[in-house]
Amino acid sequence: APVLSDWEALCATEIKRCGTVLQHHECHAVCHKYGNDNRCQFLFPHEIVEKSHFDPETNSVVLKCLDGNVNYFNPYILIFCRHNHDIKCILSGKGAKAAMFYISDYITKMDVN
Image 1 (spheres, rainbow, N blue to C red):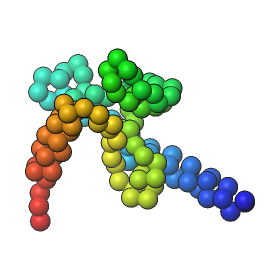
Image 2 (tube, helix red, strand yellow; image 1 turned 90 degrees about the vertical axis):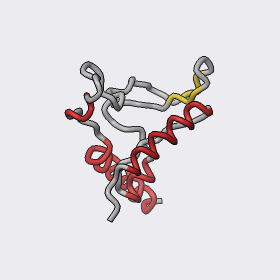
Image 3 (tube, rainbow, N blue to C red; image 1 turned 180 degrees about the horizontal axis):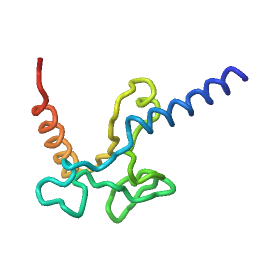
């Protein structure tokens, strides 16, 4: 079992390192475009949540968040792919439609070489 605990320790170290470098949000001018003077348009900081849970009032999954300035992420995607990402649980047609428009807008503004 020492090999597994060595791997677990390395994994925890890499999650912390990659999370700090890739997932931490710091507000810049772009965060306050379109009249968002008092609030980051990317909704940072997130609300601190001690434990992930299902909220029946909003019919949504509320993800654990211990640092309000860190994107929601999957630790395995983070350390194996080494890129920033934002995990969302989409349970409704409205949420799926909003995500589709966001993703479409995001990928069409990127330069294609």
